[in-house]
Image (tube, rainbow, N blue to C red):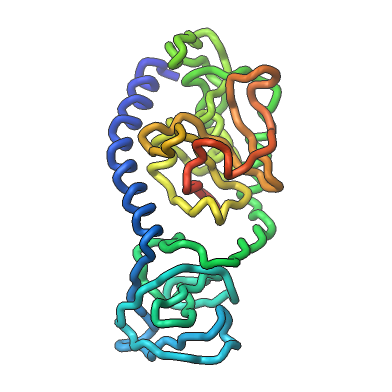
Length: 278
């Protein structure tokens, strides 16, 4: 490992992505606060009208039918019956300003995630069984627990490495072999799924693909910023492994690479998780 080039790569990637991500996250949060719009897209040229249902299920009474290509206003989103449509299979349903629900699988919103607030009373769907790749990523991360110390700038896709100088608090880890938080993510995703992720927590968040934290499931990366939850201030990342727990590398008392309990209400947790594999 070339420590100098790794240092420059980490710093350059973080600087290049911070401003862009800050703008995009702010825009996404503003859009969610105000609701969103979408365009009906059914299969065909033109496709048939899209049926609006009284409840988020295809068995519910039909109460409307916007034409293919019609723009609709989405006041909130919820989870309901799984539907396969133009944009794949989705359990997300859009509550329209005009009343009723349509499957998000037939609405172009510009995002694969939620674009409007969750409707009142929405229950997040069960996570389901993780895929074989996700299980392998989790196993790779857990295999490092208790074995190495935290090392600022340490770790990559192939394993633990010496760190760099110096951490924000001035600690020199050039002679410490181990992982920092993002280095552990690089290792877990490459060893478990042969997926390359970037080398800093900020660039990992920027690269995505992002999903709302409300849809968190095993195998997702979760991120921490300061209390403002600004993407430009992200300082930590961990792997969510299900059942309210994460694997992380952190400079703490006790094992630096550890499994611990996690809550999305922790201070600074970012509004989106990143899902490199599904």
